[in-house]
Image (tube, rainbow over all chains, first blue to last red; front, top):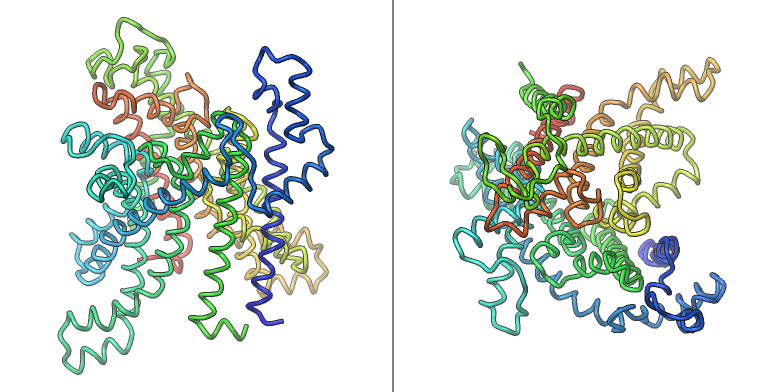
Length: 313
Length: 269
C-alpha cells in the first residue's frame, strides 16, 4: 500500500479513538442528565420513561453501539432543552466561526508580513525595539483581554462599533463588518505576533544566502532583491504557519466568540457546558476534533506533495 | 547585564512573586469583603484601583489574584515537568513500539488547541481550583514529554552514555545521572512556556465561568465581572488586565532569557 493510502487509512482508528474518548468523557460527568431534563417535580415513572426514551437504561456497550451507529449516519442527537438536532445547529454555526477565523487571518497577515519585512530589512536599535514591543504585546495580552480593551476604546469611548452581537452576511457586508471588525482585530493581533517573528527570522536567514549576494552583485536594486528574491523564498514556511493557524483559529475561538456574542462553534460549546446540555457538548467536541484530525491529514499530505525529500523517508 | 531579557524578566517575575507572597500582608484588607455603599467607585486614595460592583476593593483583589495565578502556573509547571521527565526519558531510552504509539497519540493530542482540551476536561470535572489545575496539567504533560523525549533521544547517542552502558551501569542510573541533567536546557524553556500557558488559560477559563468559582479573586473572574461595567467602571477591567499582562510578560522574558543563556543555538534572533 502506498504511503498516502496508509496515511489516509490511519485516520480511521485515530478518529475512532477520539470519538470513543468523547463518548466516555461525557458519561463521566457527575450527575444524572435524566433528572436534569425531567425537572424537580417529575414522578419516578416519568423519569424512567425519559431514561428509556433516551436509551440511557441500556448497558453501556449497547449505548455505545447505538450512539456510534447513529453518528455514522450524521445523527448527533438533540439538544436536551431546545430539542433541535445538534448536527444541524453545529452546521449553522460553522459559517460564523469560519468568517471570524478568515477575517482574523487577514488582519494578522496585513500586520505581520509588513512588520516582519521592515524589521528584517532595516536593522537598527529603533526598529528592533519597536518590533520586540509589538510582538511581546501579542504574546502577553490574551485575546479576550485585547478584545475587552478594544471594546472599551473603540465601542465605548469612540462609539465606532456596536459592543457585541452578530449580523449575517445576508444583511449586507457593512452590517456584517460592523460586528466582525473588532473580534477579528482582537483575534488577529494576537496571531500576528507569531507570524511576524517567523517572517522576520526566515527573511533574515534567506538574506544571508549566496543567491542574494549574487543578485546584489549583479546590480539589482535593493527592493527588487528584497521582494522578488528574498521574500518569495522566505514566505514558504510563513504560509505554512498561516495555514495551520486558520485551523486553530477556527476551532479555538471560544473566548472571543463568547466575549463578542458571535454565535459560532466555540460559543456553542461553552453555552452547552454551562447549561449541561450534554448532546451539544458531545457533538461540538466531536465535530471540532474531526475537523482537526482532517486538517492534520491535509497538512501531512500537502507537505509530501510540496517537499519531495519527505517521500523517500 | 549581558542578558537583558533574563534580568528584566527575572525582575518582573520577582516583583509578581513578592506581590503574591507579601502583598496581602501590605494590603491588610479582605479581597472578598463587600461594601454595598461604595459600589463601582473610581480609584481614590482609599481605594487605589477603585471598587467593583459589590464594593470590593479592586487593589486587594488584584494583589490576591497574583496568588491564584502563580499557584496555578507553579503547580502546573512543576507537575507536568515531573511527569514529562519520567515518561519522556523512559520512552526515549527504550524506544520501540510503545514509544512510537505514544508519540503518535501525543501528535494527535497536541493538534488540539489547549484551551479546548482544558474546557472539555472542566466540563467533566466541574469548576474549582484543584480541578482546573488538573485539567491544565493534562494539557501540558504531552508538551513536556515531547520536549524531554526529543532532547533525551540526542543525549542517548552520546559517547558517555554508550560508555556507561559498556561498563554495565544500570539503566535507571544512566537515565537519572546522565541523560536527565543533559537535556535540561530545552526543558527549562518549555517549563517557562507551560507556566505562561497555564496562567493564561486559568484567566481564560475563569473568564468563561469554567475555572475558579467566584468570589475567589482570580484575574479572569474579575475581568468577567467587569465586562458588564465596561462603560461605567473601566477600572474593574484595566487593573486585572494589566496585572495579567505584566505576569505573562515577566515569565515570557524570563523564558526567552533562559533560552539564550542556556543554549545559544536556540536563539531566534
